[in-house]
Length: 68
Image 1 (cartoon, rainbow, N blue to C red):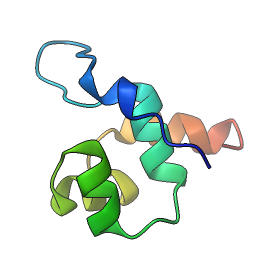
Image 2: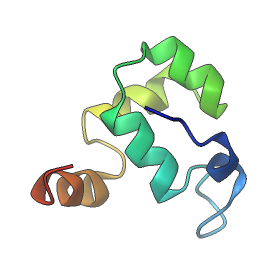
Image 3: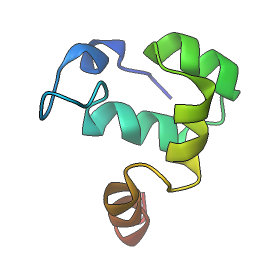
Image 4: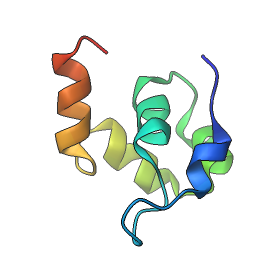
């Protein structure tokens, strides 16, 4: 899986640090949380929340519906 760090810097609505593409990469990744956090310059808690559909639920649900 290729991680697209470039997408992290793009802001979607002024408050999000991650783009949809970055969230998709995080959600589908098997890389340990601490490494993902460093790669995307976010906290391990943010990674956990994405993986467990606490943050970006609408988007991760969409990924699951589309079969990832």
